[in-house]
Image (tube, rainbow, N blue to C red; front, side, top):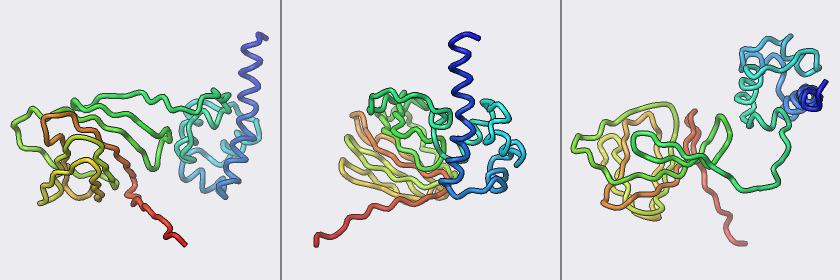
Amino acid sequence: MSEDDQGLGEVLHAVGPRLRALRKQRNATLTGLSETTGISVSTLSRLEAGQRKPTLELLLALARAYQVPLDELVGAPPTGDPRLHPKPFVRHGRTYLPLTRRPGGLRAYKMILPPERSAEPPDQRVHEGYEWMYVLSGQLRLMLGEHDVVLRPGEVAEFDTHVPHWFGNAGDEVCEVLALFGPQGERFHVRARPAS
């Protein structure tokens, strides 16, 4: 057995106890986890006992259920660097920088919106979730149902995404926005304690 194979075996062997500890920490039952993931109770039990090798398919389902990165389930060694290194992606001409790594739950993005070039009227859409947007720079146009507003730096909008909506750059300069999105409709709460 090579050193690499031995190291992989140790990592896989440690997954079971890590899964059991995570489930107990979350006060979850095997039955409840089975309902959430679609993985049978016997398979979950064998995974936790180290009697079954974890596959990528099983680990991905468990990472989604626990809302943790896959690295946390397999015990990837820490890099020692606490900084996030987001991998930006572009969708419909807009650049998104993910600021969270959780596969589910609340997600944070920095969005960079170029000036709008289309003369077409915006198409408002609806979907599951709840969104919070904070304008860092530029101007953000938000159409929300019958409302059509322009937000400037320091202004915030919060809305249920079941309401027809569209947003885009309202100016000639790049618009930068910090956005929080809850796919299951989680509302965002910002609280400050009063000074005593």
